[in-house]
Length: 267
DNA sequence: ACTCGTGTTAGCTG
DNA sequence: TCAGCTAACACGAG
Image 1 (cartoon, rainbow, N blue to C red):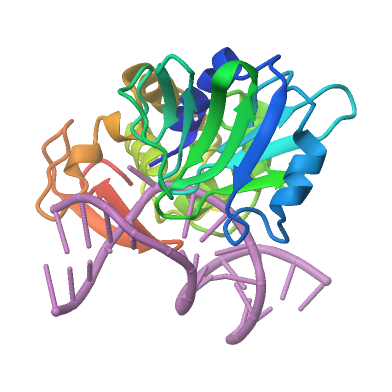
Image 2 (cartoon, rainbow, N blue to C red):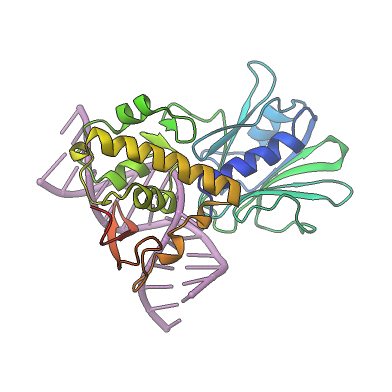
């Protein structure tokens, strides 16, 4: 399920296969996407326009059209993916369990939003779980700095002097955009920091290590196909052992999310 | 059968 | 007022 690496792969698919083509039709499920939402609003805004860029901040995607034109915002939720189909049967996918080129796509009721482009191409937001979203002119001001590009100074500034557990702080999308539950555990494990530590109590050296660890985790998972490819992900269960030192993994619940860390190294 | 969850957010609490 | 937490969303996976 999508975290920043999966969303970035979806962005790449959008960039390669949906730009500079006329939008000729929209199919959508009213009760699902943005609220209030009317398929007719999407049609009125987008038909006749063409996407010019495919953008991402954190886990939010957006597609601007011509200057000052409407913007299509997309979020994949927990299990959504982007599928682009072409007339000749080629299918390009990004998002949950992303593949560059997958088998034929059979349109189903899980296609929550379909944007038909000229030449028989179509952009589809496929989401069984219905936790994804499509909106016109998304509000991007609520997102913090993008985790992939934030520099050390801005990273420290974003963490601030909050008293909340560092793991919960990393997960707060208005502070830092793009880190989900698995990447937060992977990042803290790489930095050898206990996820329950209060943000404000971390030393300068520790926030530096955290920034390095986050970037390394993102770089690795981007190169290896997703947030589930992290080094300690397989050890996130009762009885699991730290892949570095063999220590026992400990489970906890932080910010409402399941949390696993090495009981020996993460302090 | 039953519990959990890789995301987000409205609404509650202190 | 506000930071922080919980439940709810929906459905597949274990």
